[in-house]
Structure formats: structure tokens, C-alpha cells
Length: 214
Image (cartoon, rainbow, N blue to C red; front, side, top):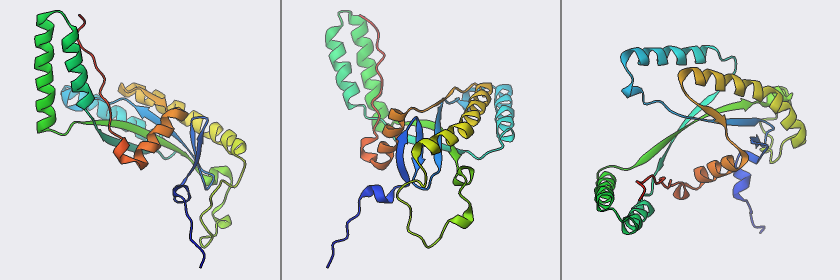
């Protein structure tokens, strides 16, 4: 009896990540933008209306599909608390020490009462197999799922960039009109992004520290 062997890679749609693009096994490609966010609830009524109209204009300006992804990640504040304790021992000013103590207590009570999450926002722009030149008639629905793209990656990448980059630039300009900053994710960022998606236990964010100086 032969042993059935299968790796995790065989079950993923992603073939590789290079040149800041995600290459899928069927030959399609995806470009990922990360955007900033607006605290809509803090805007005035006029600002909220302007934001809604600007977003509607963005959607109506699109002649291609996009996917909007909102990802929530839990923050690990244990190391943050330890660094606060360390900083408290280092500072000389009693006033700053008292400030750090109050801030530390606030963080601990916040974590105890609420689960600290951070939301991040992404826009995925696809380059499809149709744009690559693969027609539906060429696809056999009974065929085994492909494990590598049908063409050389350099060829696919060149065609994808010609299609995706104008779409990327258009989206960046449209998001800027709303007051959002969008940028294309780099290869290392994409690798880390998908690693955290497929390894949820590793996707706990470490908060940044911004404390008063001595």
C-alpha cells in the first residue's frame, strides 16, 4: 500500500511572492495595497457627508474589481508592561514616574476589561487569467488543480505590471481625496502578512512605545 504524501503548499493557491506581487498557481496575480483609516465617528456631519460622497466617487470611478479586506489582530501588551516597568526604574523625575505608573494601571485595566485589537485595512487588486490570455474553454473543470503557473513567472509578471500599476496609481489618487494614504505592500511585508494569516497564533501585534523623555 503506497503512502499518501501531501504538503501544505499543495493546498494553497499562492505559488510565490516576488517583485511585490502575489503569484497564484493558476497564473493570476494580485497586488495588495495597505491603507490608513479615518475615525468616522469623530467627524462632523459635514465632514461625514463629504467622506461618504468621496468614497462613492471612488467606487464609481472603478472599471475593474477590487477586494477590501479588514483584518483584526490582537495585541500582546505583556512586553509593553515590562518595558514600562524598566523605564520607570530608569527615569529620575518623580513626576514622570508617577505618570508612567498611572499609564501602566490604565493599560492593565484596559486589557482586563476589553480585548485589545488593532484593525488594518487592505485593498487587493487582481490580475486575472483572462487578462493573461487563458480562456475559460482552455480550463478543464475535471483536471487536477495546477501546482504551478502555466507560463514563466517573468512573462506573467511583466504582463501583470502593465495592467496592475495604472490601477494601483488610480486607487492611490482616489484614496488621497478621501484623506487616506494607500501604498503597495512590499515582498517582505506580503510574506509576513500571509504567514500570519496561515499561522493565527503568531499574529499578535507588539505595540509601539512612546513615553516621556527623562
